[in-house]
Length: 596
Image 1: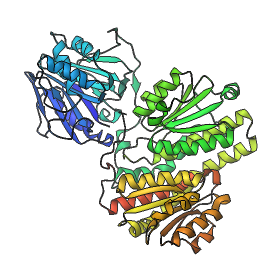
Image 2: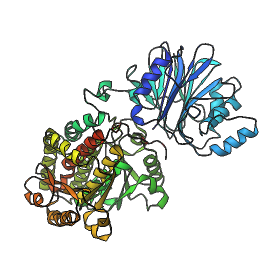
Image 3: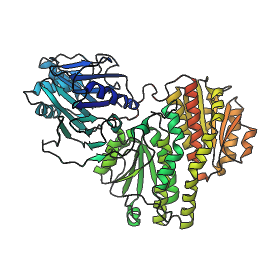
Image 4: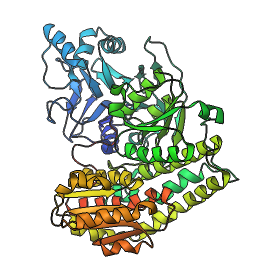
């Protein structure tokens, strides 16, 4: 959430900053602003009127402290309006710092935690902007990425990264900072990733990265090899539908890139040996939102194939329940962006307690990727829509591959089963494509439920886990209340919610549970529900009780969640479009949640 762009060079800074911020819109925001050095002064605005100058910073804000308003929008300035700052993150001790600054005569204009930073820098400023920033951050506790400019320094940007992402773009006679790579790709493909506690001092001719002791740090240049056009809509109405349609390729890339000439899984640089696996007594899968839903299915796969006990935890809860972690624990953290604040915090706590950490992420060079012991990259490509789709399906593929690799090394599955599952995985992308080719059928179903206030999802086993993701998709982009229930729990209270025409989406992909879920469908039908069923081809019995059935191609039950989620994604998308919602940028949500 939120986005930062900073520029120093020969171009008009306003143009670069506004263009960069527009490419960070997927992160979510409710206000925006820029500050530019005109050569004489620092000018600030939150409108689209350009300011002439070659040095500037800009920000898209997602409100945490104070409502969306002109006063709370970034950049924030000191009292004399000579220093401007942009900030992503949260300053946890801002109230005590604010009270101290007020005692020193500082007057505040906003309700934000950010404003304390610029006043702190001003307090310590004595002609050296870099030193003033160093002094200020000593007083701060929390998560932040900040960018600072000053009227007295017409060719300098100072930026700091602590627990909030920040990259440095390297150009010829120009340099950049940004929260994420897409903001920079129009101008440069060479970047540095800042690590925690690092400070960068930029001029148009030089990038100097310093540690907490003000010692220079030498960093490798990372060259970005994906195209900025990969993050454009490509003719589709929304990023979300484009990304749903890209799933067959993402699934195929994630799998095929990691199969050797003999068709066996090679997990890049992940070195989990048989001895390592024998020492692991417990695995935690830790994630948020859609990544958490993928982790629930990942838990099932690991326990099924590798016979290791697994717990799935919400990252926001993980640290606060004091989980039992030691050197015999493997923690798998999952995050599309690789910057999710709660997940990153869980990773750090796990490492402090001696656990080995394996990250599953989509973004090369992200914070989680850099700090984990091992990384499995999903090859989904850039995902822009806030509601995650192709990241989810590629995360499922990642979990199945990790689980199969573990199982074969431990000897808990045999070579024949291993090869059979890989062959089944290879077929998955074509099965997803077949569902996409028949998407118009699902559009018709969306018309049936688009005006309802509530929808309920039911399933058993893997289908219940899948239902959680289906309900999340519908609620987050259509604003229709949606909830997932384990179908066997209906009689324990939740069936009281079923009324005439209440939409119930029932998932029935597991053969051994099929008859039981059919019985549950009969129960809700008897109370007047309108039932849409997702089932595997050939299971015609469901047609006798459901109002509408969407069939997925026949698939191994263990892998059926991958194709079965696609109709749920499409249903949510078409309902949201028909309800007139902003599909790519749902209200109050952000793509990359970089604060707790």
